[in-house]
Length: 379
Image (cartoon, rainbow, N blue to C red; front, side, top):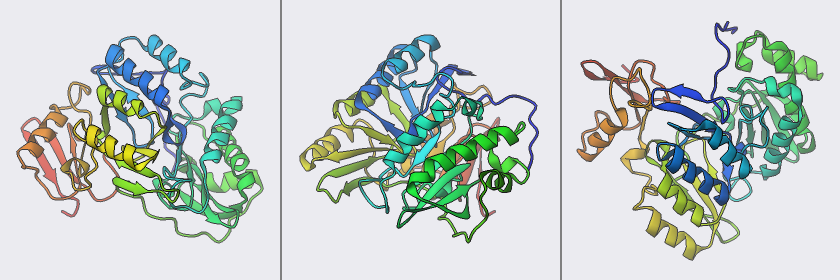
């Protein structure tokens, strides 16, 4: 459905920051969610020295800093460690990929496709005009990211066949692995030509059909893609090669700078997932045991039954001027008092906008001037 816009796309980036109530918010894209230990250390230092001391994880596997006192200095720092490979394309590098690909599960390792897609994206001047909300998905067949409804995606089926996914739906078109990146880039280029003021492909009338026609492709026999995953894996994950991946949650998807420094000291690449958790892959067993022993008390959550993994929250005060309260402080107090207002998944919001609300069946706990109201999803 077409959705006319009265304002331009202002999705924040590392250079185009968002002026929040607590100061500039800068978002850094991490294609495939991957960040090196050197890059994480640079972000931790920036969070401590020119931010609010925290790194926030986003639902697209990216990261952001709030209250950035010197945005130009921040941009310089991340450029120095390779987190800003293109100043013209930095907001459009939204690439989600199966976080465990090449290590656990899946029918093919898609990590190389992420790299190739990112390079191709940044190399095409026309694609700098994509909206900052455009989303690419590369699913290794696990079914963990195709359900997140990307604009342009591929889903591995095996035998060198990938399903072409547009607007979150399988088109029935099948492409070989060697052709996936080219097809995704051509589809995105078509979107820039037909989108008018739309931010997402599904906002363009007949968008999928028009993209397929421009690519010289036709609808095939589609499969039903998996439903969105509510929460990624948590805990100790054995890799087939004998190493270990540790999957850890974080309260509100927020990584304190001090904890980030300790994570960086592990000296392994880290994967940020779209469920606002982190993966520490390729650890020897003894190293994994040390990480759990040291970092669990600092805030990494390895217990899948932790109440913090059932509760999400908007930024609240002081980050949002529209919020009626400091939402996250209220949630922490409710957890400490064992006084959560509902069972299961719940999202606390500082106002009726319900920013950051996850997909699926969630109880809403919404702040108002007179206090919180609980909105059961089945009522």
